Length: 334
Image 1 (spheres, rainbow, N blue to C red):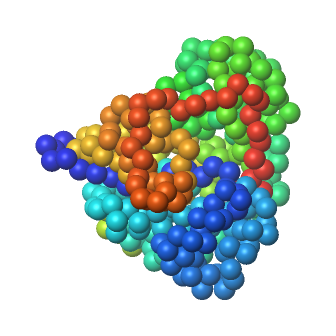
Image 2: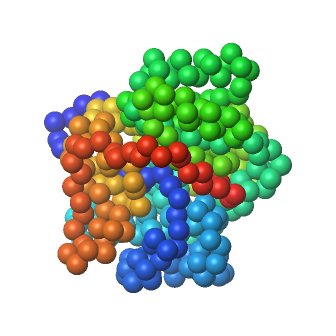
Image 3: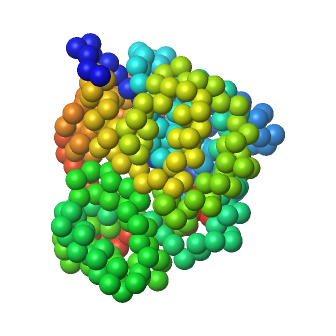
């Protein structure tokens, strides 16, 4: 489908390491967050901020709920103060939860509980299985070089999966933690950079057991309705317009690799020219494939805290990378 009418999309980013020291001030003073926090506290019967402050984990259940709240609240701000009226909605990886709430497919309090319960479900699963796997994000690695390095793992009988394609030369690779450092050295040797690793892993075909458990314990019970905005699937770019389709999408995130290029292709085919990335995003709004095709408006906590609260318009500069070894974020609840 193509259209001559300019359209916009709201994009909820995937979750990076979330710390109270980074966003706590924002959450305490921003009126849009405070409104969502009150509803979340009521839904869970406890203070999200207190749990987030005390937990001290980058991906703990309260860190996940806080990231979800911030993403939805920043979209609220964009609607009320920035004139956001999106035609399409994208939830990339963890951002699917915010997209589910914003699109009207699940009331906000229920989406809070779903986020919290999924985090605990994943915690229980990874206490039992796949404790030695991590997912590493790498960049500036051309496809031929990556194929070569992965072939070396295959020759040694080492498990590995490509868990995501984010941009040209930017991938997510799942592998065993004991070989992580040697793999990072090989990535450096072919001219690439290791950004960060997550433990437990994400978006792996091997995680069908987690998908089944999440469906049985949490997602299968969610009272989803048809979204009011069409959603774009983060693994193949398909349009999701029904409750059943959204339920499948929420489950697919466990055992399907994420891919950003198909999302970009679908948005362009739908006539989208502007994307609003609302949430604590360090990646999507800066990717070349994003800035090359869209007018990108980024609204994260940093922009919201500025006196004028003006969203930042991304440039075409590629995301900055560091040559130091990747830091592993312990994802005990995700």
